[in-house]
Image (cartoon, rainbow, N blue to C red):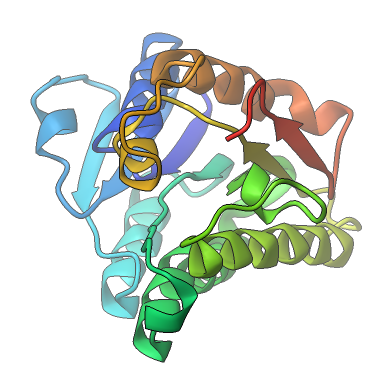
Length: 226
Protein backbone atom coordinates (compact mmCIF):
# COMPACT_ATOMS: atom_id res chain seq x y z
CA UNK A 1 0.00 0.00 0.00
CA UNK A 2 1.39 3.38 -1.00
CA UNK A 3 1.54 6.16 1.59
CA UNK A 4 0.08 9.39 0.22
CA UNK A 5 -0.18 12.90 1.70
CA UNK A 6 -2.74 15.31 0.23
CA UNK A 7 -3.13 18.94 1.31
CA UNK A 8 -6.28 20.98 0.77
CA UNK A 9 -8.28 17.82 1.34
CA UNK A 10 -11.55 19.17 2.74
CA UNK A 11 -13.25 20.13 -0.54
CA UNK A 12 -13.00 20.27 -4.30
CA UNK A 13 -10.18 18.43 -6.04
CA UNK A 14 -8.46 17.44 -2.79
CA UNK A 15 -11.63 15.91 -1.34
CA UNK A 16 -12.10 13.79 -4.46
CA UNK A 17 -8.44 12.73 -4.52
CA UNK A 18 -8.54 11.44 -0.96
CA UNK A 19 -11.40 9.12 -1.89
CA UNK A 20 -9.73 7.93 -5.10
CA UNK A 21 -6.50 6.98 -3.37
CA UNK A 22 -8.32 5.40 -0.44
CA UNK A 23 -10.56 3.29 -2.67
CA UNK A 24 -7.48 2.07 -4.50
CA UNK A 25 -5.84 0.70 -1.38
CA UNK A 26 -3.50 3.55 -0.49
CA UNK A 27 -2.89 4.91 2.98
CA UNK A 28 -3.84 8.58 2.93
CA UNK A 29 -2.95 11.42 5.27
CA UNK A 30 -5.37 14.26 4.55
CA UNK A 31 -4.36 17.77 5.63
CA UNK A 32 -6.68 20.76 5.86
CA UNK A 33 -7.72 23.43 8.34
CA UNK A 34 -11.02 21.64 8.88
CA UNK A 35 -11.24 18.03 7.77
CA UNK A 36 -14.73 17.31 9.08
CA UNK A 37 -15.88 16.38 5.55
CA UNK A 38 -13.12 13.77 5.27
CA UNK A 39 -13.66 12.43 8.78
CA UNK A 40 -17.35 11.94 8.05
CA UNK A 41 -16.44 9.43 5.32
CA UNK A 42 -15.01 7.05 7.96
CA UNK A 43 -12.50 5.51 5.57
CA UNK A 44 -10.32 3.01 7.41
CA UNK A 45 -7.12 3.81 5.51
CA UNK A 46 -7.46 7.61 5.77
CA UNK A 47 -6.13 9.73 8.61
CA UNK A 48 -7.19 13.37 8.66
CA UNK A 49 -5.29 16.08 10.54
CA UNK A 50 -6.65 19.57 11.06
CA UNK A 51 -3.57 21.53 10.06
CA UNK A 52 -2.82 25.17 9.34
CA UNK A 53 -0.16 24.86 6.67
CA UNK A 54 1.22 28.29 7.51
CA UNK A 55 1.87 27.25 11.12
CA UNK A 56 5.25 25.56 11.56
CA UNK A 57 4.15 23.93 14.81
CA UNK A 58 1.24 22.32 12.98
CA UNK A 59 3.57 21.10 10.24
CA UNK A 60 5.71 19.24 12.76
CA UNK A 61 2.60 17.20 13.63
CA UNK A 62 2.68 15.86 10.08
CA UNK A 63 6.29 14.79 10.40
CA UNK A 64 5.56 13.18 13.76
CA UNK A 65 2.63 11.21 12.29
CA UNK A 66 4.76 9.91 9.44
CA UNK A 67 7.67 8.98 11.71
CA UNK A 68 5.36 7.10 14.07
CA UNK A 69 3.06 5.39 11.58
CA UNK A 70 4.59 5.17 8.12
CA UNK A 71 8.35 5.75 8.15
CA UNK A 72 8.34 6.49 4.40
CA UNK A 73 6.19 8.47 1.94
CA UNK A 74 5.46 7.47 -1.66
CA UNK A 75 3.49 10.51 -2.85
CA UNK A 76 2.92 14.07 -1.69
CA UNK A 77 0.33 16.19 -3.49
CA UNK A 78 0.52 19.86 -2.56
CA UNK A 79 -3.02 20.78 -3.55
CA UNK A 80 -3.93 23.49 -1.03
CA UNK A 81 -4.12 27.01 -2.40
CA UNK A 82 -5.16 30.53 -1.47
CA UNK A 83 -6.59 33.19 -3.74
CA UNK A 84 -7.11 36.87 -3.05
CA UNK A 85 -8.79 38.75 -5.89
CA UNK A 86 -8.25 42.50 -5.80
CA UNK A 87 -7.14 45.19 -8.22
CA UNK A 88 -3.37 45.53 -7.96
CA UNK A 89 -3.73 49.07 -6.61
CA UNK A 90 -5.59 47.63 -3.60
CA UNK A 91 -3.30 44.68 -2.90
CA UNK A 92 -1.18 45.13 0.20
CA UNK A 93 2.05 43.45 1.20
CA UNK A 94 0.01 41.53 3.75
CA UNK A 95 -2.22 40.20 0.95
CA UNK A 96 0.81 39.05 -1.00
CA UNK A 97 2.32 37.45 2.08
CA UNK A 98 -0.89 35.54 2.90
CA UNK A 99 -1.09 34.14 -0.62
CA UNK A 100 2.61 33.25 -0.83
CA UNK A 101 2.59 31.65 2.62
CA UNK A 102 0.05 29.07 1.45
CA UNK A 103 0.97 28.74 -2.22
CA UNK A 104 4.77 28.74 -1.89
CA UNK A 105 6.28 28.96 1.60
CA UNK A 106 4.18 26.24 3.25
CA UNK A 107 4.90 23.88 0.36
CA UNK A 108 8.62 24.49 0.70
CA UNK A 109 8.57 23.99 4.47
CA UNK A 110 6.37 20.89 4.50
CA UNK A 111 8.49 19.31 1.79
CA UNK A 112 11.67 20.17 3.70
CA UNK A 113 10.61 18.55 6.94
CA UNK A 114 9.34 15.45 5.14
CA UNK A 115 12.50 14.95 3.07
CA UNK A 116 13.91 12.31 5.46
CA UNK A 117 10.87 10.16 4.68
CA UNK A 118 11.10 10.48 0.89
CA UNK A 119 12.94 7.66 -0.83
CA UNK A 120 13.99 6.48 -4.25
CA UNK A 121 10.84 6.49 -6.39
CA UNK A 122 8.91 9.01 -4.26
CA UNK A 123 6.88 11.54 -6.25
CA UNK A 124 6.05 15.09 -5.13
CA UNK A 125 3.31 16.71 -7.22
CA UNK A 126 2.74 20.45 -6.87
CA UNK A 127 -0.54 21.91 -8.08
CA UNK A 128 -0.03 25.23 -9.84
CA UNK A 129 -2.20 27.18 -12.26
CA UNK A 130 -2.14 27.97 -15.94
CA UNK A 131 -2.08 31.57 -14.70
CA UNK A 132 1.46 30.98 -13.45
CA UNK A 133 2.74 29.98 -16.90
CA UNK A 134 4.81 32.59 -18.71
CA UNK A 135 2.91 33.79 -21.78
CA UNK A 136 -0.47 32.46 -20.69
CA UNK A 137 -3.55 34.68 -20.65
CA UNK A 138 -3.60 36.74 -17.47
CA UNK A 139 -6.65 38.18 -15.69
CA UNK A 140 -7.01 41.40 -13.66
CA UNK A 141 -7.17 41.01 -9.90
CA UNK A 142 -5.02 37.89 -9.72
CA UNK A 143 -1.54 39.43 -9.40
CA UNK A 144 -0.77 37.80 -6.04
CA UNK A 145 -2.27 34.43 -6.93
CA UNK A 146 -0.80 34.04 -10.42
CA UNK A 147 2.66 35.26 -9.43
CA UNK A 148 2.73 32.82 -6.51
CA UNK A 149 1.85 29.98 -8.85
CA UNK A 150 4.70 31.03 -11.12
CA UNK A 151 7.05 30.92 -8.14
CA UNK A 152 5.82 27.41 -7.31
CA UNK A 153 6.69 26.24 -10.81
CA UNK A 154 10.28 27.48 -10.44
CA UNK A 155 10.56 25.97 -6.95
CA UNK A 156 9.51 22.60 -8.37
CA UNK A 157 12.17 22.76 -11.07
CA UNK A 158 14.81 23.60 -8.47
CA UNK A 159 13.86 20.74 -6.14
CA UNK A 160 13.89 18.26 -9.01
CA UNK A 161 17.44 19.30 -9.84
CA UNK A 162 18.60 19.25 -6.24
CA UNK A 163 17.25 15.77 -5.45
CA UNK A 164 17.67 13.98 -8.76
CA UNK A 165 20.60 11.95 -7.44
CA UNK A 166 18.32 10.55 -4.73
CA UNK A 167 15.81 9.71 -7.48
CA UNK A 168 13.02 11.67 -5.82
CA UNK A 169 10.80 13.20 -8.50
CA UNK A 170 9.21 16.65 -8.37
CA UNK A 171 6.66 17.70 -10.98
CA UNK A 172 4.09 20.48 -11.23
CA UNK A 173 0.67 20.49 -12.88
CA UNK A 174 -0.59 23.88 -14.08
CA UNK A 175 -4.35 23.50 -13.97
CA UNK A 176 -6.86 25.37 -16.06
CA UNK A 177 -10.47 25.99 -15.12
CA UNK A 178 -11.98 23.36 -12.82
CA UNK A 179 -15.42 23.69 -11.26
CA UNK A 180 -14.47 24.46 -7.66
CA UNK A 181 -15.23 27.08 -5.04
CA UNK A 182 -11.96 28.82 -5.84
CA UNK A 183 -12.93 29.14 -9.52
CA UNK A 184 -16.26 30.68 -8.48
CA UNK A 185 -14.34 33.16 -6.34
CA UNK A 186 -12.05 34.12 -9.21
CA UNK A 187 -14.62 34.05 -12.01
CA UNK A 188 -18.15 34.32 -10.57
CA UNK A 189 -20.73 32.62 -12.74
CA UNK A 190 -18.23 30.93 -15.06
CA UNK A 191 -18.90 27.24 -15.67
CA UNK A 192 -15.78 25.17 -16.19
CA UNK A 193 -15.70 22.26 -18.64
CA UNK A 194 -13.91 20.06 -16.07
CA UNK A 195 -15.34 18.83 -12.77
CA UNK A 196 -13.39 18.48 -9.56
CA UNK A 197 -13.67 14.68 -9.82
CA UNK A 198 -12.37 14.61 -13.38
CA UNK A 199 -9.32 16.66 -12.46
CA UNK A 200 -8.79 14.64 -9.28
CA UNK A 201 -8.76 11.46 -11.35
CA UNK A 202 -6.14 12.93 -13.70
CA UNK A 203 -3.91 14.00 -10.81
CA UNK A 204 -4.38 10.61 -9.16
CA UNK A 205 -3.15 8.80 -12.27
CA UNK A 206 -0.26 11.23 -12.78
CA UNK A 207 0.87 10.98 -9.17
CA UNK A 208 1.08 7.20 -9.44
CA UNK A 209 2.88 6.96 -12.78
CA UNK A 210 4.05 10.39 -13.96
CA UNK A 211 7.45 10.15 -12.30
CA UNK A 212 8.30 7.25 -14.61
CA UNK A 213 8.57 9.72 -17.48
CA UNK A 214 8.84 13.19 -15.93
CA UNK A 215 10.98 15.01 -13.39
CA UNK A 216 11.22 18.75 -12.93
CA UNK A 217 8.53 19.31 -15.54
CA UNK A 218 5.50 21.56 -15.69
CA UNK A 219 2.52 20.06 -17.47
CA UNK A 220 -0.29 22.33 -18.57
CA UNK A 221 -3.61 20.63 -17.79
CA UNK A 222 -6.10 22.98 -19.35
CA UNK A 223 -8.86 22.69 -21.93
CA UNK A 224 -10.08 26.28 -21.69
CA UNK A 225 -9.23 29.88 -20.82
CA UNK A 226 -9.68 30.72 -18.01
